[in-house]
Length: 385
Image (cartoon, rainbow, N blue to C red; front, side, top):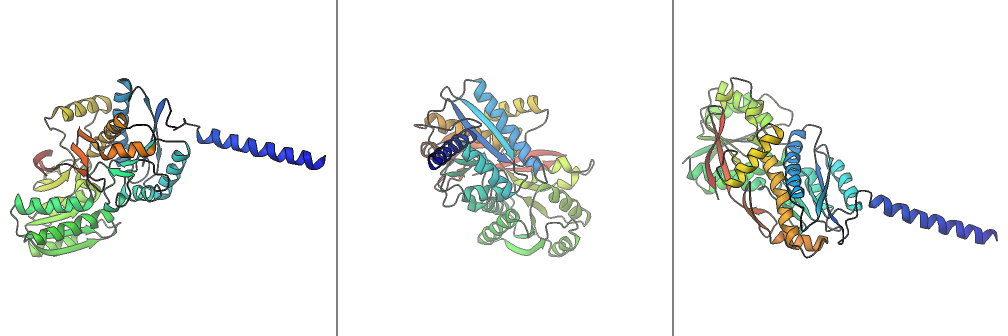
């Protein structure tokens, strides 16, 4: 009798544990193919050093989801969206990713910065869940990962674009590079720029580096000034870019300065009266806020009404990412991961950041905006294919 009672108790505990596990996994909704809603989850930084990027992208994402839900959803299903704070950290991103997979997410947006994005991309292969990063630019994020896509262009592609712009639009003969040697982003852009510039017949006169915490760049800039290059590539994010531009101006460097999309936002952190330090600066960006295209004007006008500020490229990329998913989900045979991934491969949209489709490595094929700064305002120089 005691043995039978023990067996019954163990069986009851087993069944109870199984039931608890299922309830926990579906706490925020079941992600089955027959779900009456679309479970979409986001990963990005909301606190920490890179929070400004994550919050900006999140604004665009939420705006797009609200628009879609207010219009009736996708194929009659509303989007159930939640997002978590990865603090720009790969471990935090993985914790969120694991939770969202367990909750039955149909798809994931994220992450925002490259290293957390790469972490979840590398660990997503067995789950085969669709992942679209709005802003993860590291080349390896999508390589060999059929379920992982990006809406932004890559680090190396920006370097190539800037080298071609220097050769074809600015007709330069010489260049120098100032890079953050501890940053994959900075190195990725810089290496590709140097390779393409040399192929275009541009002589690289200097390749100077600095560390992650450096704030005084005068030694490197003095060495560059002695070489008098036609252009100087500064591949970093805007917090360092504005300091470098100020110190270059103070040292009397007359070279035109080129940069990748990390320059977007320099005007927001420059001291009042310092806007002139950005004259003769050019940088790649994903869109132009004053573009006359209807899709851009509508996005910018609605964003300004909602958030009382101009949308950055991170906001525009977050917004476009949702509409990439919308188009894929409209055409997908079901809400299974496999069918959504198949649909993503065939998506084409006319987005805020350009007409977009994915290449064989799930990277976007679209044009790049080259912006300059005049009289304290961003101005479109040209679009480069």
